[in-house]
Image (cartoon, rainbow, N blue to C red):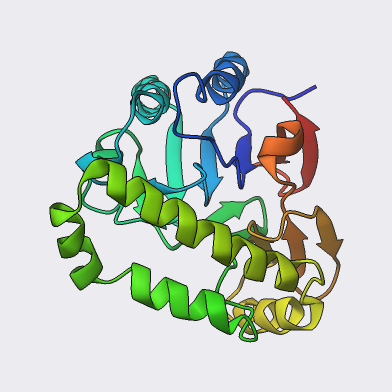
Length: 239
C-alpha cells in the first residue's frame, strides 16, 4: 500500500510519438494522482525521443503534457530530469507543463539525501554515445532544426537513434558497476546518501557508503521507486 504524500520516481518510459502512444502512461498517471503523492520525478527518456520543437510535436506529446500540467496544478510537483533522448526541453513548451527541468535533483527525505540523475554520462567508455550527445545537443543543431521539413527530420532522427541504440545497448548490457560506485562515492562527499540512476534499464541496488539504485525501465512494468519523505526509506512498487 502506498500512503499519500510519497515521493515517486520513474525512469525510461520511452513513450512513442504516434497516435495513442500516450494511453498507457496517462492511465498510469491517473492511478498515481489517486494516491496523492507529494511529487513525481521523471528521471529521463520520457519519450522514445523528445525534441521540444514544433517540427516534432505530436498529439501524443501534447496529451502527456496536458496530464502533467493537471498533476502540477493539483499540487503534485512534477520534476523533469533531462535524459539522453530529451532534446532542447529547457525553454520549451515542456516547461509550461512541469514544475521544473534540470540535469539532476537533490531530494531530502528524513535524514537521507537522494540524488536523482539520469546517468548517461558516467560511462566514459561509451564513445559513440558521447559523440552523439555532443553533436545533437548544441545550439547549432537546435538552430538547424528550423530548416528541416518535418517528414525528413523524423526519418533522420529515427535512423540516427536506431544506430546509437545498438551502441548504447552494447555498453548497457554490462553494467558499469565500478563507474557507478565511484560516481556515488564522489557525490557522497557532497552529502548524498543515495544516487538514483535511470538509463541502464536494469533494476539494481548497490549498497555502500552511498547507495546506488538503478530504476527499472517504466515501459516494461510500470514500476516506480517510492521514497518515504519522513523516514527516507524506499521501495519499488507497481502502480
